[in-house]
Structures are given as C-alpha cells and as structure tokens.
Image (cartoon, rainbow over all chains, first blue to last red):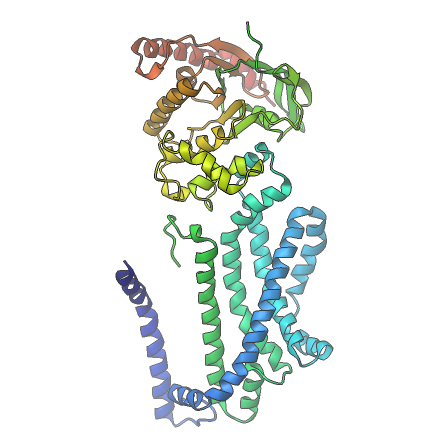
Length: 261
Length: 259
C-alpha cells in the first residue's frame, strides 16, 4: 500500500512543483539578462549559494527564533485551552473576556512589538509574549466553536446517563472540538514564526529577525532572502507537524470520512 | 393484576407560551413493550426528557415502581434519535459509555460489553470506528450501548427513523426477536404506525400539540409477528383503524385551533 500511496502524493505535488520551478526560472533569467544589481535583486542561485556559505550564521540565528516560536506557541496553546474552558463553563466569563480577546487582535503588531520589547527587555520573554498574542486567538475561537458544535443528541445521552457537566465536557465537548481545534492550530502555526521574527526585528541579540535587519542594513538582500527561505521552511515544517500530531492524537478525524488535505 | 412499573399521572409541561404536554397520563407494565405514537412535533421526545431528567414537569406526577420519581433516580436507559455514536470512540468504547459514566473502570467495562457483540451482530467490529459501520449496525451498537446499562426500562426515541425502508424492517424483526429473548421493558417513540403495531403490546396514541393521550390501544397479536401470517393480516387492520383515527376530522380540528 505504501508505495502507490507515496506515488499518489508525489503526483499531487507535481503541479505545484512545476509552477514554483517556472517562477524561480523566470526570476533567474530576469536577473541574468537585465543586468540588475545584485544588491537590489539577487538571483535565486545567488540566494541559495549565500545561504549555503553562511549556513553556520543562519543556523545560529535560527535556533533562538525556533526556541521563541515553540515556547510562545506552547504558552498560546495552554492559554487557548484554559480560556476556552473558562468561557465554555461560564456565560459570565464569556461576556467578560471575549470582547477583550477580540480587542487584543486589533492591536497593530508594528506598534505593539517595540513597546513589549521596551517593557520586557531584549531577552526571550517579549518574543514569547508576542508569539502567544498573535497565535492564541484562532485556536481559542476554534475551540469555542467546536464545543458549541457538539451534537445535542450526544449531550442528551450523557445527561440521561447521569454525567456531570465536567464529564460531559471531557467525554463529548472536548473531543467534538478537536477537528475545529486542528483547523485553528494550522492557522495559528503559520503566524507563529512570522510573529517571532517580528519581535526580534523590534529588538534582539540573536535570531532570524535581527539577522534580516542587519543584512538589509549591510545591503545584502541575498542574505535577507536566505533568512526568509529558512523561516519559510520552518513554518512548513511546523505546519506538517500539525498533521502528524492530529494523526496521533485524533486518528478518527481522517478515518472513513475520506477527507484528505 | 400487577402494578404498573411506570406511571405518568396528568403530567403537563410548557415552554414559555407553548403548551407541549397537556395532562399526559399513561402507564407501562413490567416487561411490556409500549409505543408512544403521534405526529411529528407532538412532544413525544419531551416525555423522554422528563424521564431522563433533561426537563421538569410543571404539574402532575411520575411514579416508578409505585413511588414518585426523584431527580436522582435513573431507572432509564435512553437511546436518542439517530444513533449518537461518538465518532472518536471505537465501537467497543461507544457501547461501554454508560458504564464508564457510572464510574466503572474502562477495562472492566470493556470486559462487560465484549461478550454481547456476537448477539448484536457486531462480532469482529469492536475496534472499528462508527464511520466504518452501516446504518443498521450503528443502530444495533446504539441499542447495545443502551441495554448494557442494565436499567429497568429502555427508552427508544425513533430508533429506526433514519434508516432506509428495508434496513428498518430488518431492524424491527431483529428488535422483536431480541425482546422476546430478553423481555426488557421498552418504551418506543415512533411516528411509524406499522412499526408501533408490529412491535408493541400497547400503543399510547398522542394528539398533536399540546399532546394528550387520545387513546390507548392494546395489540393482542401472537409473536413473533413478522413471521406469523395471521398476525400480519390482523396488524394491517389495526394499522388502518389507527390511521383512520389519526386522519379523522376531530383530531385535525384540534390542530386547526392551534395558535
């Protein structure tokens, strides 16, 4: 089974690969034929070459970014679960907190990031906070809607069995919310690396964000793009990890229903 | 004559301005198969809500085994409309849900339900997720989940309503056979007249909302009815008379007077 399935996946990815290759090829041709300066628009080959030559520096700056991303995202996960439970169990909490959560998403990151750095310093903490601020909301909303989507019949059944509110939450509402949660998780995770980089951009000792800023100031767009490439790969990696986690934690979501990403 | 196991005495309930149940009185004998038959939206499911504690009556009394039913009493095992199987639980874990809620350790609960799978035609499907099962199998799994709780009364809310006609017939035949073997006390909610006649000892006929018990019809036909030619023929007669009654002007007049 495994061989043909892999082949099917490769076959599905083929159009995307062809399209991306065409774009890169056009970019490369343009850089070589137009005589545009390398300090304005470097060719993809140049970016790849410089990424390879500067791999040690890139790696040294990737580690702090990855650390900030993962820690921030973990905090965000814990917050999303706790807060979603608070608003699920108490209408008062929902009325009190939900508007605040929505307001938190209206804050322009450009303005807030330097302030958070100002308040909490150049260390890890402001990055963690900013990543959490940007990523907790989609998961929170997904969880809240997931709880609400629990089938009435299932809840009636549990009531008839004498289940408490807490048991109903654990046995029905939480598992019902999992497909929604994973959808929210995938949205969130694509923001996470970008948020960490933005936080570093606003002030950091090390990290992809500050690396990009320095490269830009040194007129090295090739290195900026090399760092962008790394951050994109990081996001893709984390995004794929969500599928793996889903398959482990909730294998029933895919099974039988025939849905495929 | 034996005492009724369950007795509803002039039970009324309204949601806001809407009268749902109006002086409902009915009883159920031990080991009896009783149907509550009525038009859609008449409030049949609301009667089950009263019994399972999901709603409270405004007036009237519910007695179980001669004593008023307390909110802490749970002598009923409920099978909701559609099957309410949890897609995230394997079939064996779905069927043991009631035992788990009662506080039985999972391992022990699985051991308790496992031997019943063969009898319910689910042998070999213990580890499947519900999505992989046919409609009929899902209903049998839902019924297994209901009976394994070992409650004195089974409440079945339109259990076969969502099935195709052929599967529904097969399930009715199967349910009658199971009932003949186990003699559970069953209250079946249905709007399918034939289903009520073929399965029940007695039928409580409900009026449109606000629901009252219009008539209680005994069905003294021999069992097993589906394989009994005279039973089938007489069932058809009873079915016709019930249909005539449900379609009669006096019943429909009442509907006309609804707000």
